Image (tube, rainbow, N blue to C red; front, top):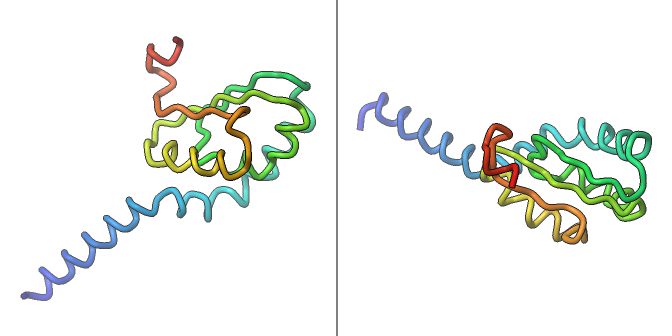
Length: 117
């Protein structure tokens, strides 16, 4: 096997791994920044019992790290993201944080006319 073929195979394997692990990579890179943003928003801008539309919810990890606020304020949150892997991953994150009755995620584009239903 030529060195060019080896490089191609290695790059292909890396690409596949990045794609498979993308929700975990997202959490590692993004959640540390957005956790505080969610906390401030939920504490200061959202009233008890409100409904919240979260466009670009990602894996829902940053939101779920603020589960106590969501529960205390009895919020109902609909999260939308166009990355299917993130939405699938979010289901487990939401369940693990005990927010199944408070947070729902949908795989869709905000431009999807079906989202309005």
